[in-house]
Image 1 (cartoon, one colour):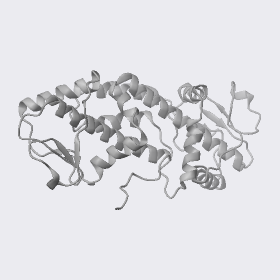
Image 2 (cartoon, rainbow, N blue to C red):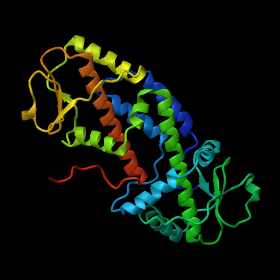
Image 3 (tube, rainbow, N blue to C red):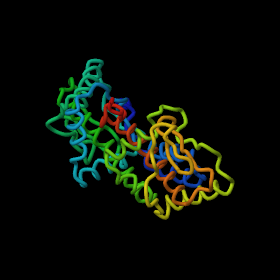
Length: 317
């Protein structure tokens, strides 16, 4: 029996590694510059991505693929997620190695699945016992992580079933990731409530300048301000203390009015008044930081999963 991995998909250890990583990250003090790193590290442990990125996809095909994932009901999501947890091996393996021709066809069919909306008519079957497999069709014995395939050349339909199975498996893990964050981190509920338009706008506000470091301050915070900032970050994340309004966004530095708080899109800088910042102003900064960093990570995740073709861009004037 071949132990060839299927595209390095879905390690059984993902769930325990998720919890271990989140626990270790939670025990570290997070500063305003490390928040995005924290989020990325946690999501990376939760989401197993098998798509290297999708380019030149038709919008209709992306919509069809995303709809296929999101239309799964709760029972189906739980079945796929449980499948990843039942596996006692490190990876899911084929019962035999794919031929060169099957590997070539798999690559082509995966592209059609993602970019043309070519989906299977049937689905991978589940085996209660490995001995139940009779050499026909594609079937998974979840406990051992063996995906049984026929000895004869795989049909297109069978390869599409395999692709579909793993995309749904990935998506179920992704959904559980979102739910885990909402349960463990109250501020994530605020992030997940953002509409797609709000998420893209937050991304564009912070990242349109294409700088290596976004969200710099126009002046240094005083020691007292720095302490207060960190306290308010904790209040925002753990006590649901949110700003009453949103920070003023300006496009160019010359639009800044002295004595006010504003974020400049052109140079990705927070312009601060010379006076001591109020709690409301700090919360506005914290809110935009969280929304922008969350949106950045979420958009990249969606590109990797094939839900987007590219990052948001401003329409040309």
